Length: 259
Image (cartoon, rainbow, N blue to C red):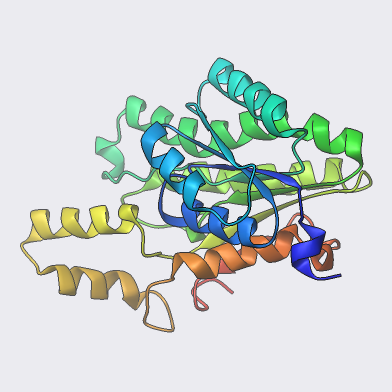
């Protein structure tokens, strides 16, 4: 069965869908036949993307993934409009850097909130539909920072390690129930987050943007920045029939940086 037929009319919710990796995942799943709910905090951007997606029946919900009541309301709205959830892509995330001794408790909690607690809350909201149907896919967008350490991003790295741990544990709980739970772990990817990091390096060091980008590329054995479409294609595969035996995995999309 072709992937487009297999995903046809399956309700997929993508968090952090307004731009970057999330928007590309939405485009890819819509092209494969899924019916999308785009979740984020920027209503106009989400509405514009929903209108551009292939297929029909797509919609948006506005929510803060770190807020339990906001998540509950958003999932109820999505379910009422487009039916039970079959696919959840936990993509919403935020990265901020600071030396460890300058990492405030507020920064620590913010990184845990959006990157880890958000994934937990959204999985709890989506999973009952999947268990009732006897089929579901949860894909958490982690990071190579969930597989190794990076300096100056201890809070972000701890949160993404938590996402990987959550993935492994939940995957075992639902393994016999037709639901798979996996993580995709991109290396440095061409997104707004990376461009902000480049701008930060330029501002702090006076180096050129080209030199800063080369530094980020250097950790990738392919000496390149990952493209959002490459991450989205890994997600699409994990949502498909051929990945039914892939469960509890953290798949690195990083040119060999993590092996």
